[in-house]
Image 1 (cartoon, protein in one colour):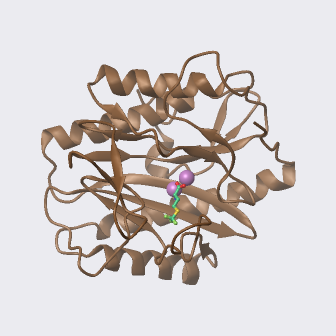
Image 2 (image 1 turned 30 degrees about the vertical axis):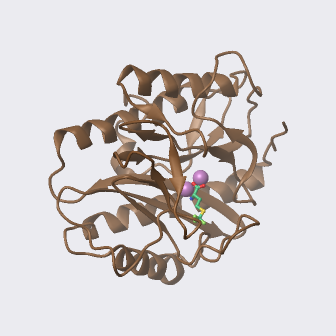
Length: 267
Ligand code: MF3
Ligand code: CO
Ligand code: CO
């Protein structure tokens, strides 16, 4: 497996794209309320990305080679939807729902990719716990990142924390290298064995984006060929950041202001 090491110029471009993607998640939070549709959320994000940020929403018309292009500008994954939920006017959010909003922007050719869980109204304690543990999984993975660490160390840290909490790790989808390409090598698995896999080097950029299920890890894809759901229809959660490997550890390129005080001391 290969992984690109970014130039200083590339890193500068990635910092800009990452910061813009983070701003979209900051903007959309107040709109995630009972009664809004995921189609509304898509429209608000699209207009902000294009109009305010002068950027391109990467999901719109994105195709992974086979199957139909993704028809919207963001992914909205509600409750038992694991990832790649398609926004629609027919999906109205209701109190108690949990929803992942996944934003990828392209700015000057560079990609920034990040997602966050939102609560609609007041969450059930069980949903709140799944969302919290999934976020802890992301940051346990980030805490491992430094030159010399192995990819298996990241996966192992995530899997250990998820399973210690009696949750399961989705295996069919993973994090990815990112830069001037949306989905580059290497694949960042969210499970694994320590001391295995590629060795990280300063200047690599990739995402970590664990999908953690409340029940069994198995998933299926709906006939729209995008929407991924849990087979047992139990809840799933996901959080994602785009990262740069630095001499000291990791720089979170998609860090939001709300995370600034606590990042690095999350778990
Ligand atoms: N943003 C997703 C990721 O984290 C990919 C979405 S592809 C789409 O890799 F086409 F569904 F938008
Ligand atoms: Co991603
Ligand atoms: Co994403």
